[in-house]
Amino acid sequence: MTTLRVSATRRIAAPADVAYDIIADYRDGHPRIIPPRWFRNLRVESGGVGQGTVIRFEMHAFGSIQQARGQVTEPVPGRVLVETYDDGAKTSFTVVPAEDGRAADVTILTEMASKKNGFLGVVERAVIRSFLGKAFKEELQLLDTVARGRTREPSREPPMQSAKNRA
Image 1 (cartoon, one colour):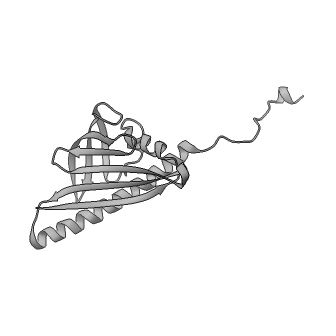
Image 2 (image 1 turned 90 degrees about the vertical axis):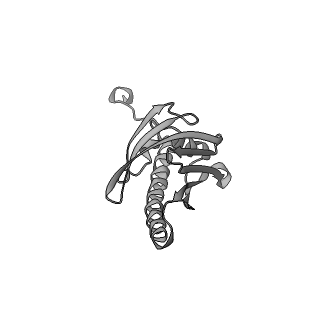
C-alpha cells in the first residue's frame, strides 16, 4: 500500500499561541474552524483541550457520510498537535511563529494508506488530494478569521459619555 500525504499551509495573521490555542480547544475553538460543508457534528468524548482529547465527527464526502473517531496527542506541545483516527490515518497541525511573533505559519497534513493499487489507486489518490486540499484551505481561512477576531486591539477612541456626564 502507498501512503497518501495531503497538506496545506497558510500564514495566519495572529501570534502562534493564539492559533494553536484555537486548534487545540475542541470544545470551542476547533469547532469554529472546521468547514461545515465537509465536517460536521464534532463531539468531544473525553478531555477537550489538547493531549488526551478523544473526538468524533462526521465527514461528508463523495456522496456519503463517514463517521470518524480520533485521539489527540501533542508531540510538541504548543507547536504540533496530531489527531490519530481509528482507521490509522493521522492529521497533524503544525504552528510555527512568523513575522517576529506577530503571525504564524500553520500547516495541516493528513497521512493515510491508499487502499487501491494500479489505475484505481491513482484515481483514488487524486480525488482524496482534491477533496482534502479544498477542505484544508477552507479550514485555514476559517482559522485566520477566528484568530484575527481574538487578536483585535481594543478601540482607542475614548468611551462615549452619557447625557448626564456631558453637562
